[in-house]
Length: 316
Ligand SMILES: [Zn+2]
Image 1: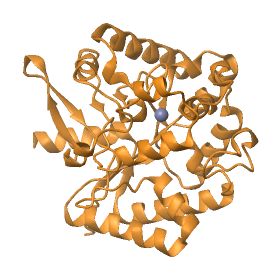
Image 2: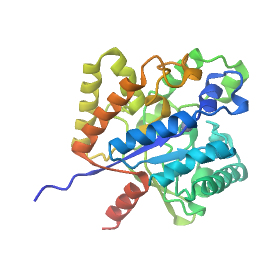
Image 3: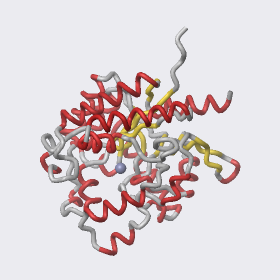
C-alpha cells in the first residue's frame, strides 16, 4: 500500500488591475479598470492543464459590472471555489469598527454569491489585515476559516519597499503604517490553528505558509522574483521550503497572485509594474514547476476541502 500523502491547499487572491494601481498610488484606479477579460481565461486554462482546482478570493467591488460578472461566473462553472476578499480591498481592516467590518463582509459575500452562484465560507483580508472583530463577524456568519495571516518577520521590510516604490502622499502612508504587519508577526503560528472567540467559540485560521523556522515567505510572488535572479536559486529555495514543511509536519497553504502568472506582454496597462517585464510563459513555467513539486509531496486541495480535513483531523 502506498503511504497517504499529507494535504496542502492552494488559493489565488484575485486582485484586479485597479487594486494594483491603488496600492501603487496611480491615477485612474478609482474608475476600477479591470483585466479579468485577459487574466481569468488565461488562469483557467493553466489550471485545467494542471488538473487543479483552487480557491479564488474575490473582491466584492469587482462584481459590479456585467462584464466582470461574466468572467467571475467562469470560475465556478469550471468547478473552482470562491472566497471572500472584502468589498473594497482596503489593507487596513484592523482600523474598522465592528459595524463597518460586518457590512464589508456581508456586502462582499452577497455580491459574490450573485455573481458566481456560490456562498463564500472562507475569508482572506487584503494585505493580510485582520482584527478580532473581523473574526467574530466571520464566526457569526458561519464561516469555516479565516486565512488572513502571514507569519513572517519580513512584513515591515515589504512595507518599506512598497512605500519606496509608490507615489503615495505622507498622510496615506500614515494610514497604512501597519500594512503587511509587524516584526512580531514572525512569531505567529505557521500551521492551521483555532482562534478562541467570545462565548467559547472557535474559528479555524489557515495562515499563508512561510518557510518553517526561517519564517520567510515562499509563495509564488517570491519564487518568480528569485527565478529572475537565478532559476537554480529559485529551485533550491523551494526545495528547502518543502523539506522544512515536511520535517516540521506543516501542511502548506500556498498563495498565488494574478501578476505571478501573467506578464506585461499580455497586460500592457501594467507593463511598467515591478516584475511585469518577466514574460507570461516564464511565469507559467515557474508555476508548473512549483506545482509539480507540491503535488509530488502533497495532495493539493482547494481551501474548503483542506479546512474540512483539518477540522476532521482535530476531532479524531
Ligand atoms: Zn488582495
